[in-house]
Each structure stands twice: as C-alpha cells, then as structure tokens.
Length: 202
Image (tube, rainbow, N blue to C red; front, side):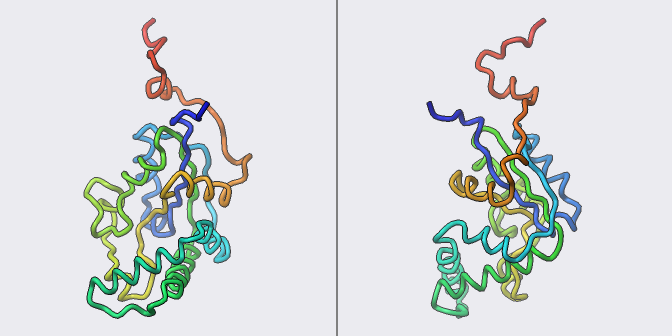
C-alpha cells in the first residue's frame, strides 16, 4: 500500500539573510499555520563542500541552472558570461557557496499532506521581485535578478525549499541523520487527517 500523503516530507533551509533579518519565527509560523509538522531542525554554518554537494545531488542541476541563466541574460538583451551552460552553472554554484557559508543557517524538515508543493507555494518564486504578494519572498524581500547580477552575487531570497518529492528525498539525508528526525503525533493532526473526526464531542 502506498504511503498516505500526510507522511510526505520536505526540506527547508533558512538562509543567512533570513536569520540576519530576524525572520526565522515568521517563516516557520507560515509553515506551521498550514498544518505542517516540524520533524527536524538544526542551526549550523555549512561548509562550501556541503553546499556544493547539496546542489549537485540532482545530476542535471548545474546544466539546467546554467541554461536558465543564459536564457535570462539573452531575454534582458545582455551577453551571458559564457555560452556553455556548465560554465555558467558553475558560476552560480560559486555565488551560492559564498552566500550560504557567510553565516548560520537553519535546516529543517516539515511533514504533512503535499508538504513539498505547499511549502513552495507559500515560499514564493525564486526571484522576490516577481513573487506574489502573500508569499514569504513576496512579502519580505526586495531583491531581484537584476541587482544580484549587477553585484555579481547570489539572489538573497531567505529560503531554499525542495522542488519535488525526489529532491526532498535526496536533500533530507544530506542534512540530517535518520535519528535526528522525530516521529511524533500532533493533536491537530486529528482535525487535519482523521476521516470521521471521531472523539471531538464529549
């Protein structure tokens, strides 16, 4: 029998700017209000190697991000730094390493129905400028690709969230040992998931 959707897990990293802007509580509150359950959390300063491995867990990531960047440069009428997506992808990773090792981060794992998609929706698009109002990035960040490119840095968008269940399944063990994730019951899960809402009336 397939796992129930309520057991889906996703990985969320609050980046150094999220901590420096004192938005940790606000970010986590958004996920908690949805009904997601926090099952793992830690604070650390990651190494450059750990960050590189994180982004290369997904075999085609470097090439895909390079292609996306080249396309973005061309759309803006600018010359890309290289026509080779792997070269551009490598530059993106170098920027990310600098950004994500600049201070402490908070790594967390959230569980609940459709956790991956729900977290992505509430977090907002990668670029804060074009993220919808009501999303975390849309409400709390004013950065843009244009500013990041001008300053030759990674875009500061507070959060990394797994893009798919497959990504989450690769990212969670990269950041957490099995014993660091806690299986427990939240009282509110009865309201969210019990079929008949048994036991509400005395």
